[in-house]
Image (cartoon, rainbow, N blue to C red; front, side, top):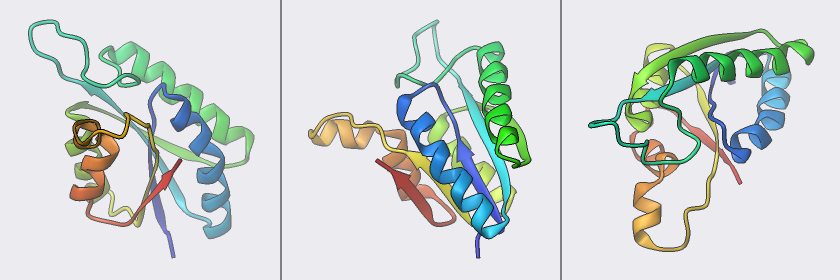
Length: 137
């Protein structure tokens, strides 16, 4: 059912908590697991708009290697992809490129305001995704 699962990772607690579900689904469906992390492009040295999104390629590489090690301990092989760009668009582009059957993401609460919901990477991916998405609260 889910031949290829894309798991975008960042430094957030929600991403770490979603890893358990990712492992369960990948094992259950014997899926190909692709881990993605995005180096967010910023202008004029500004900080990234969302916490948990990293702007250093070195930090992203370290994060991906740590995530891969976590899944290796569970007997799961994971492919790594590191990209640069706007996270919501990059996640959807990669999902399309790898023919992902499912994207699994942690949900980061940004408050109950409309502005917070519109700013969420998760919300934007939901609206742009080429495949089903599983959001882990």
